Image 1 (cartoon, one colour):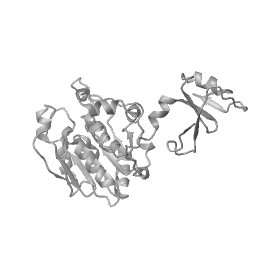
Image 2: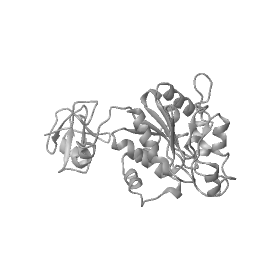
Image 3: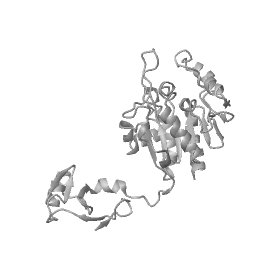
Image 4: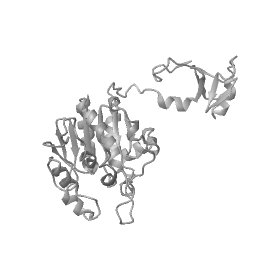
Length: 304
């Protein structure tokens, strides 16, 4: 007998080896929508006749032991009661008229995710149009072990079906984090639903954060008094000098640092491509990919 009650929070579940277990009521066991009268048959259908568990809910569901063990709480892993952090990722894939691809920048998702997940804080993903999003191919660095860890995680699977802004309940989140990648310059601004969700999270006492080109999501956030969230606040973002260094000044729809300054922000630049994080009240921003871990660490500090 194996107790899973600490893992599945909506039910008190008891787990039993299920091969050969028979139930009297038809359709009391299901696997992928198919009804079974015998647990043995359901276990076989699940592909694990000799390594199978029966979750005692109604209707019962079957699961392979190896799959179940992945969900088991690691006693060495901190468990947080903090609400999850909402990650905003770009769904835009065309780099202007260059014929090149863009998207979200992998390390700018993976590194903050790593900081939060190590502390037991969950993350959820939303994109401006919902659904599947694509990685900027320039960011596909598999020499980075944190990138590899993220891509192998269950959380990464959410990037194949991100939430739409209309799916978001701001009350469910402790923070909202805008990840970068040049795609953000096209689809983060002018998204009223995301801007409203971010404003609500902030005014509920939560954190608004962004890194690199992610601050493109900040340019249209207005608070309930009509002021821009960034007005009068110090922040970091991808600089004009960095945009020039990557030869995309004439490709992006606007220069991010200039647009934020127009909104009243106090842009605080550092040297090109050096890690640089700025926190002003509950607004946390980072300048470039090297700043992603630091942004994650500051988010964690503020939501704890």
